[in-house]
Image 1 (spheres, rainbow, N blue to C red):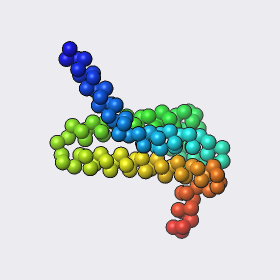
Image 2: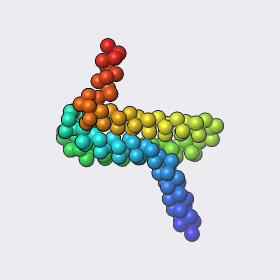
Image 3: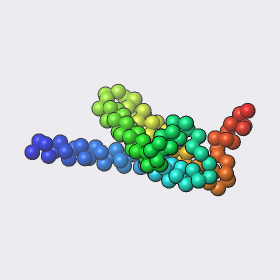
Image 4: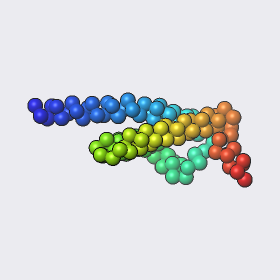
Length: 129
């Protein structure tokens, strides 16, 4: 019976985690993957590492890397939840929102490539120069 309650506890922990990262999944995983797949028809991947991985293993490798990243985020989540520090809630909220914001930035950048044939990164580079 102890094992069953342990599995229920782990499932509850994972479901809480997935509910907590809904915007990361929406923007960073699904949004960026889908818009990147479409935007590659209009341009190229500016991240050299991702470009090499996708060239060698295909676009699906990007999704696998994102799932691996979610695994790392889950590890971070469990470490923060198990910690006794008073800063854990703040650290989790900041990291969760930061990753979701990066995902939103990537989606906007990809949509600009698709519809305007110019990326947000290119605009930022031209303004700073």
